[in-house]
Length: 298
Ligand SMILES: CC(=O)N[C@H]1[C@@H](OP(=O)(O)OP(=O)(O)OC[C@H]2O[C@@H](n3ccc(=O)[nH]c3=O)[C@H](O)[C@@H]2O)O[C@H](CO)[C@H](O)[C@@H]1O
Ligand SMILES: [Mn+2]
Image (cartoon, rainbow, N blue to C red; front, side):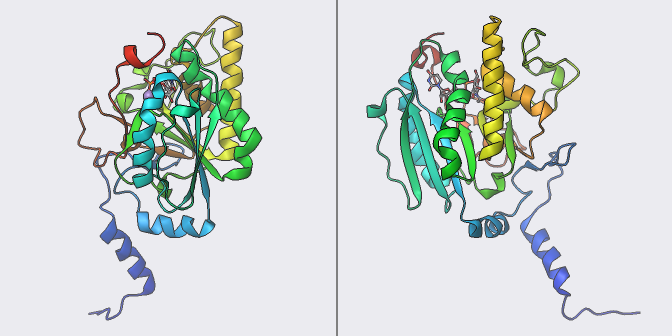
């Protein structure tokens, strides 16, 4: 029988809309074993996702710590965020610093706000990095839970280079560390000492997540920061500090509490690393820094 479909059924239009916009990825895994999306260019339609999220009138909190000499990274971080990060959404930046007078004034688009929160300095970079969990937890309690729907907690020594939008939103969001994307789990630098509460045995672990991005619903990130802070302090009481401070605790937490969305290394690259062919777009990357010069200790 010769069937001629003059006008496609509306459902067919829907499917052709998808196939035109998305060139399905076969070179990368785009879903976790627990069926959470792994976000890669070409696996989502930014226009369609924005149509879902924009009417919700969401506010995205963004925490960034700039303690000591790290204030120098703020200008580029904020200027590039204004160009690429959550454009068209309400964004509230929370800048944690011991040098409030050195926070640069950057022109923010409409609907975007910035507040500065004073935190103490430290003579150990490890402590500054790890105590982010504590300050994020207490600031969520004090104000963020009343001021935002979602939150991203980001490293300041970084720049945005391309679109980072509502495709990244989810209940609990983490990023695959670009250094360990292709490694097997026995190579992951998890905390391996049984004495630490961040301990992960050699035959466990899903991904190695980078400490530079934690995201999700404010309440889910609240619980994460509270648990990681408590465990970090419990370890300190036993004179042990996990191999990669709060990043180790983050990895332990996410092993037990699976993220609902995983960002590919497009969302956390490193300028020092050559691009790999699977990464079609670098959206956010760590700048090259001289650790000995910017950190209070080596
Ligand atoms: C790409 C990535 O996943 N980076 C992680 C990695 O090293 P990194 O080398 O990226 O750590 P880092 O030196 O950037 O420190 C983490 C963050 O702490 C803040 N800071 C640090 C030192 C300082 O003197 N002043 C200051 O403000 C700042 O926001 C910085 O971005 O391991 C750290 C844990 O130890 C963190 O988990 C980082 O997120
Ligand atoms: Mn960093």
